[in-house]
Image (tube, rainbow, N blue to C red; front, top):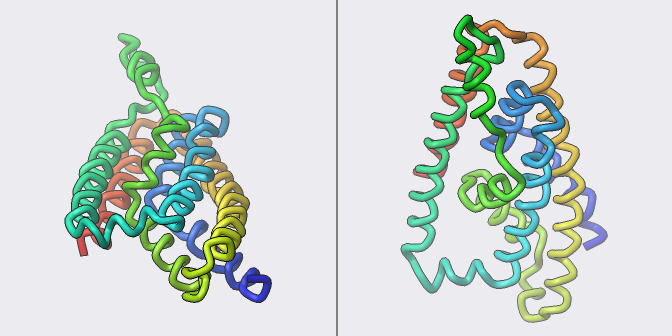
Length: 211
């Protein structure tokens, strides 16, 4: 495992830092709500995905072999949830307050994802499933399948790497969103264009899952 540590870190950096549903939503949340309010969402991503990987790596993945339709069901639920999140992003209100005060009221109703929502979302994230499958195939040896302790050790190392890189990536994308939010300001037109673009990117992320 020590020989694979550097490649594992590079793999994790590539997968976590490149655009995907999590990073699209973190950027949008940072722009709309700021870093502090996005922090639970950030933690949910950084800790939720390693928990998902741990569960699949330690045996839950066998359920997909035993129940052929399970993966398709998760894809359907995940795709539907992504469409719902895309709609939420597209309809985020601008922070400006109009004469009737409706803008501020809408802003009050809008909420970033909670820690639990972000953690549960990892099970519906198509990029997350690609990462799980790729990591298990690449960084756990076939021989470790017969040696439970060795496999557990490998998976725990991967989980630690994922937590560290996931925290850095999530914080970076949320911070990027905060910077964009400062540029967007209170312009309703800019906000609408930005939110529509991010919602569109989130919808596009469903394509690999459907394929």
